[in-house]
Amino acid sequence: MNTFGRVLTAMITSFNDDESLNIENTIAIAHHLLDNGSDGLIVCGTTGENPTMTKEEKLSLFKAIASECSSKGSIIANVGSNSTKDTIQLAKEASKIPGISGLLVVVPYYNKPNQTGQYLHFKAVAESTTLPIMVYNVPSRVGTGILPTTLAKLHAEYPHINAIKEASGNLMIASEIKRLLPNDDFMLYSGDDALTLPILSVGGVGVVSVVSHVAGRDMNQMIQSFESGHNKEAKYLHHKLAEITKAMFITTNPIPVKYAARKIGLPAGVFSLPMCEPSEDEAKCIDKALQEYFNN
Image (cartoon, rainbow, N blue to C red):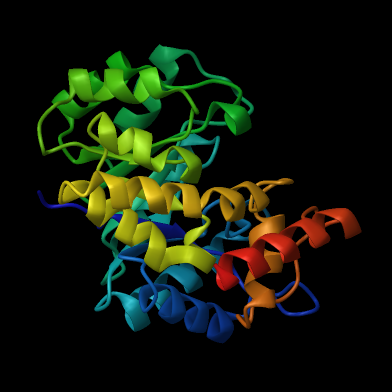
């Protein structure tokens, strides 16, 4: 099956002390991830603090990461927003960049469109590009979600809408997606690290991961083990990853993972407000999980 890869890291973005974009450091992080278990990268996703980045910053980062890293793995540009017009404009510009493998497009947030509105949104975006589109379903951040029936309709009409980052936290939704879209031309990715193994069991191909910043090799090995029928090893790795996964979501993403990335020596830089440092108790929890994971 042709995929974007098994482990796609929703990568952090490095900022300078004045919260300006540090492209050099972000490229260094990208290389580290691709050398340590990631098959591809989501650039300027939520973990990358894209809500506070300008369009110009996003495009400059798309170009830099694609130029420097596309030979190592898939580069997926997050172009989604709650404005269909803005999403289309960014999709068109990102589609011109050599080395971009696909686009991530979130269900429009805050507006809370119904299923017809969501269908029309993704239809309009699909008609603006020929690049593969990964739908991002994350009701906890958006306030609503796309139904599997709407997704199936979109894929039937626009085959390059060929993947979903499924982050509803509901395994039945993931299962229904694969029931309606069983063929290998549609890719189901877990959008929740903790549900990667269960989603693989209902037809998923991989994960859009946060934990892979610190545990990419184990995450990739878990998926490979499951795919090769070594279920005991896959289950062992799932349990090994449990505590570090829990710590990475002890508070709002990307606060824990950016803190953790700095702890393991990555040049993550500061947070872009309104994201901020973890509390003292949260930091202690993350430190403990990192120590236990790397000493395991």
